[in-house]
Length: 425
Image (tube, one colour):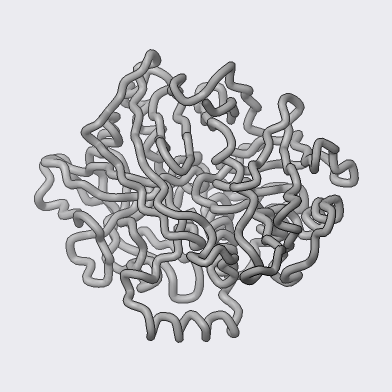
């Protein structure tokens, strides 16, 4: 996922030299969110949301293809891999017109959580997305003329620790959207945590949609099972290298003071204990089961317990269309905004208190994080950050992205094979 989430332009300024070690000897990697999911006039970005949905659908399609290739099987609830999703023709035409009128530097509607990493010896800096919904690292190669590298390009000939490997990396997100290139190993450092002989691709081709983004590439933080490279992702390599004391990384996502903490958790950002829940599948995702959804303190009882994938590379939240409709049926004054895209609105002055629970505490999505903006100026109706979409993962799997993660401190534990949540300070 990979997916560069296509809703909002978020530039994440990482200060790689400002490394803060805490009691667990991990490394804090700060980054910032620049703006929100809504347009400048406070209205909902419909086209950006649909574009994001297409990329998320194709990100998880890529993951299924990788899982099938790597393990020879699909999840029990998945009978076939869905076809490649594409932007509807009516919106593709609007996007084409937009690209003709607006400078390319202003076209990035992505939401990204990322920062600087270095690759090679001597180190070259790259600005990448950190994505818990995918498992590969890719950045621009030195021969890529189409790549929109914001910082460096990788040249294996200039790195004393680099080596070229057999094979080719290819990833596709939507029609004519993707990247491909050769495969290498080299030293990768994230905030001082080193992974030696880390597999990655230095892509030589990148579609224009990706090259217009504000980052150079992506660093996946999910499990090896969905790796296109068929190799350990960065954090698993760091564990094998004994570069981290604790086999945990954690996110604080917020308007200010956001960070990825590698090798433990940062108690400066949360209070109380972390409520961990075991990963419930072996298909490569940070997926936890036994979830329930609540509206205004009441459990939506018509929805049986479900699975949830926690994904920092996804902007909003997605559930099966029928279940999402049931949720909004419990929201007073809700309306269908666009049925085909699974979008709903609610009265802006009486937002629902949406929460999720995995058998312990209920974790509430704040009004600010649930509101994607007014349907139009002065309408009084706002679009909710929960959308109905079939991800091709089965009828009981939900996807919780940044709209959820921004309300909690989220820890991903390889040693416990679990995802945990704690109260933000």
